[in-house]
Amino acid sequence: MTTSEPANKRRGYLAVTLTASGGTFLAMLDSTVTNLAVPDLSRDFPTASLPDLSWVISAYAVMFAALLVPAGRLSDVLGRRRLFLLGIGIFTAASLLCGIAPNLPVLIVTRGLQGIGAAAMIPASLAILLLDGPADQRVKSIGLWSAASAFAAAVGPSVGGVLVDLFGWRSVFYVNLPFGILLIFAAVRLLPRPADSGKKQIPDPLGTLLVALAVGATTLGVTEGGSWGWWDARTLACLVGGAAGGVVAVLRSRKHPAPALEASLLGNRSFAVTNVVSLLYGMAQYPWLLVSVLYLTGSWQYSELKAGFAMTPGAVAASVAALAMSRLAPRLGGPRGATLAGLTAFVACGLWMVFGLTEDPSFLAFWLPAGCLVGIGMGASTMGTSASAALSAPPTRFAAASGMNTTARQFGGALGIAALAVIMQQSMGDGGGRGLDPYAHVFAFSTVVAGLALVISVFWLRVAVPPQAQAAPVAKPQTPSPTAEERSRG
Picture 1: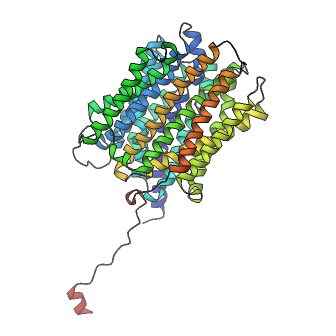
Picture 2 (picture 1 turned 90 degrees about the vertical axis):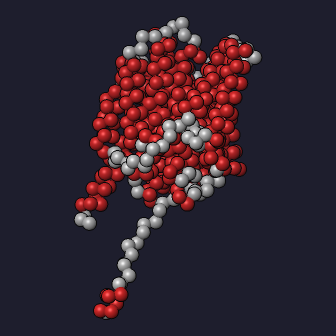
Picture 3 (picture 1 turned 180 degrees about the vertical axis):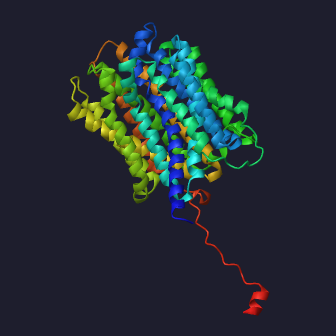
């Protein structure tokens, strides 16, 4: 082997890593980039209520969460490269449709289409990193993937603020177009074509539909419960129907030859607990990011542009923390240690926010340190939960495992955004209390939920890595045994 071959391999691995992480970045960016578009959307659609506008965020999160699990299974059927390309194509086309949407209902529908594309990209991207890269670099790969995910989710409001302030809300969708086209080109040129492993069944269509309906109905019930009434027949139908759909989907997946859900993975205790923690973490993270924007623009009277820049330090801290934790995690006890450290920082910052909110702007003394602290918490938590889920599964199920784990976080995010809409609406509608109360109540909600995730992690999260998921040792070349003729000559 020449000295240039290792360098070429490193460059090839770097190119694959950047392409796969780029898909993750776009998918996660659009989960929060519309946060700062809400005020601008309310001006364009003045008759829409806050719960109505929140569906611009929730429609993406619902479809994203509902289809991540079957997308992970579909990765095994179509191939991770093909599914990755399909996801980018749908996502890019839907971004264009969002940008030209003439009204709010069309925008909500096209946001759902975006979520479908994103759902295909996420499990395929992590499977590409873990299966097409060196086995001994898997933890590092998860760190890079998590850094892209955490940075995108945290920087989304910043990017959205700049674009909305300069060009209006439609620009947050148009900006995806050049990056989507670039990723398609890079994926075609750079991603290896996996060998055909034979015919496999498409994941159960009915089970997939049941998962999507369970997620969508539950989120609809939580979102509209405050408007309809919690004991209204429509609210109860959504909540009960969503729960029933989820139960039937799980039971069906236990017997189906090509299940929509990898129910067998839930028998792994560390994987199951990680998904519970991820769901709670998503419920805390997404409303936190949105209420931060609403607080800066509503209480401190920041412009969308200024609010976006104010959110940037936290996004950078999240990315740095995820990368650092991929190196520090072994010293902290593995993914569990990273998760505990991240959630502890999140809860500490939550207490700070609940009791320290100010009506007058105080960026350097209050917002900057708080934003960096919660950014560190988000980056470490994302890396820890992603690594816990992926490394709890054998390589043949990396895509399915990552899909289920990201589903838990995204579904939690959809529920968290729905809870935010209810909390804000009730806090603003009661006619009493300080002007900071609606924001403090949402920060308190996020802190309590993150605290619950921390308690569960302390007592029940134990990451047991299957032997198949560990880095395979490099086999040493064996010297062939001498033949009888050679021994006679010797």
